[in-house]
Length: 164
Ligand code: FES
Image 1: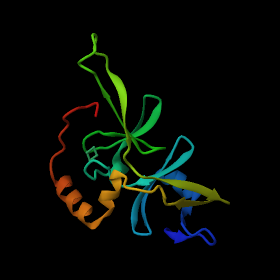
Image 2 (image 1 turned 45 degrees about the vertical axis):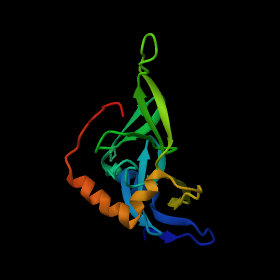
Image 3 (image 1 turned 135 degrees about the vertical axis):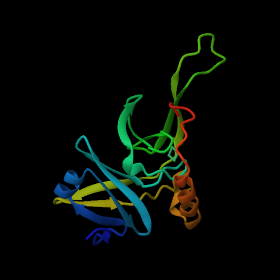
Image 4 (image 1 turned 90 degrees about the horizontal axis):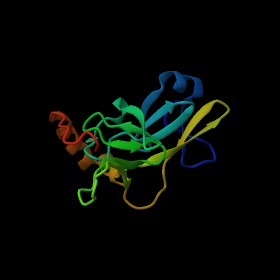
C-alpha cells in the first residue's frame, strides 16, 4: 500500500514494489501530506516535491535531459531546469559586461526539495527530506500555494527565455 510507514524508521514510507515502479517509470504519491514525484531514470530512483518551485508546474510531465553534466527535469510550464539529484535550479546566461559575452551555466541554488529513496528486499521507500529551513518548492505544498498553483496552471504557458 502506498504511503505506508516503514516499521522502525519513522520517516520512511513504502511507496511500491521495485519492479512495479521500474515499469511505471514515474509515479506521484502523497506521503505524510506531501505530494511527491518518484522517477526511475537510467537505473536510479529519485524523489522530489511534485510541483515546480517556480509556479507549481507539473514536474511529472517534464522531460529529463542533461545540462552542464547534471541530469535535470525540465518543467513543462516555463522550461525551468532542476537537477533531479539535488533540486538545484540551473540556467544558462551571458554576462553583457564580458568583452566577448559567452553563454555559461549558473546555479540558483537548491530550489526543489528532494527526498531519499531506498530499497529493502525489492520494496521501495521514500524518506522525506529533513533539510531545515525554507526551500522554495515548500510553498506549493501549502494550501495557499496549491490555490495559487491552480490559477497559474490555467494561464497559457509563456516562454520568456528558453534557457531559464
Ligand atoms: S512552473 Fe515550472 S518553470 Fe514555471
